[in-house]
Amino acid sequence: MTMQKLTQLLFILFMLILSFNINADTPWDYAKGEQSISISFIDDRFDRVWEGSKEASIPKVTQQNTWLNYSHGITDDILLSATFGYTQTSWEKNDSSFNGIADSSLSIKYQLLNEFIDESIASVSIKLTGIIKGTYDRAYAQNPHSPGDKSNGGEISLQIGKFLHDNFAAYLDIGYKILIDNVPDDIVANIGIYYSINKSFGINALYAVKHALDGTDIKGNGFDPNFFHQTKEERQWLELSIDYTFLPAHTFSFGSAQVIKGRNSGKSRIFFIGYRYSIF
Image (cartoon, rainbow, N blue to C red; front, side, top):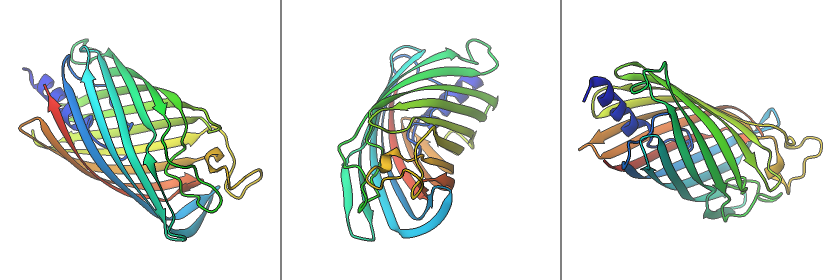
């Protein structure tokens, strides 16, 4: 195995594991027959929000998600994945809570170019995702802290990445998300870098954006507090994670993220941990 192929394998072990942004992805696929199962726990808390573009304080909201993901390399170019989860939120103001199955997804990714095989400038993939709405209740006037949009839909996304050195890579993931059930469509993007310290440890840094294409502002014209899912939600955040791989089928991930700018969104501080088992 060449150093580049070994580095690519290490990158797959690290990068297709876990993130606060559970749908963030890279262009590198599994080889035919490779599989993985992962579980992650995400803790998200905030006591400041953007009502439209104006920042305000509120009683603390806490959201906790547990995610289970399964991925399978059908061929060297095609990867199938399924992500399901359980979510719960609570609000200090009235001790109310939401809980239920989170918005889940099924996806297929096709690798168009592989820089190691095709000698292309970069690796490129395209991914189609189906979104299945969860079972939790939607937000309403007295309880505005629902854990998601609760909407069926789909997403098409493009992933581009390149190894700039044997142990350093950069990647971009950009997508268009179509949502039904009166939820605005989104444009989402993730830009990240990855550094492999050695065969066991890696560091990943990510900047991510979610931008709703339409919708109302909280407390703005046309806003109805019983229809929070129709607001124009935007957020930008930074994320940093450390991965530890051993044996080499086992990977643990630890990370944190901070929302730095938003619209009709919480100013969240997020911590996450996860474990992934790979079958080669």
